[in-house]
Length: 310
Image 1 (tube, rainbow, N blue to C red):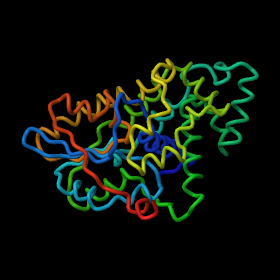
Image 2 (image 1 turned 45 degrees about the horizontal axis):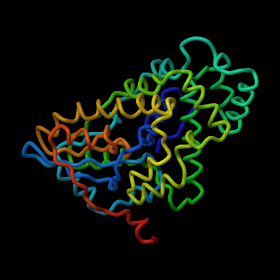
Image 3 (image 1 turned 180 degrees about the vertical axis):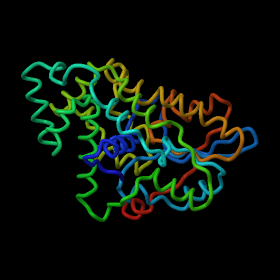
Image 4 (image 1 turned 30 degrees about the vertical axis):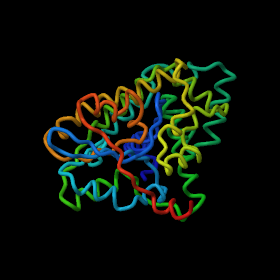
């Protein structure tokens, strides 16, 4: 897993790698399973739902998943991991285009925000000086909490996120890998969340509202159980703030993922790995592939480290 450093490029790349597996939405039906067979146009491919974590349990898939990857001629990941983001462009997207963070809050609210950042982030003073957008401050806090979670038990720590592992396995087998988005597009999706909603999300997180705490032990347990519906259960689709958030970071990206993945599925066997909850729901990747005429079926497998203890 990539961790934050003091360099703008490293920090921005870590944010994108982390956030791409952490967005959840609500489905109108029950869905279970992380590995799915996609059949159509004379080809068979697969879709896998990842979670960007250094927790080794989530990386202990049985041989079914890697066997699926090795059957394919192309591997599609959310981003091109070999692409180096432009640090100036990343800093531009992560920072407020005008004004300061204090313009978004009352004086008393700003005191809450400053205390929250100082408590959660060692680099809080520098980030406040750089005038980062609220959503990127929140994402940095969430990544710091994820680091703390996996380091509680050193036996679960693995210094390789899932998408990085897929990239390495594909490279070792001579399978071509492709990114479905550029770093710039991913960052624009997040920075495109309306600023007033970003400000509310950060303030609610400072006040302990659970919606902003996406990385929880319950979410991780649901992932181990491959229960997409349970992972989505916290979302209120009637909440305008949540709707704007998920439209920006999930649904619009799902459309982009599938539009760019279809030519690969049409031309040959393809293994597509995106954040787990990009898969689910009526606007999820699986539904979009079905709408495009593909047959999509769950492929069972287990997490070996989880299966042996439960």
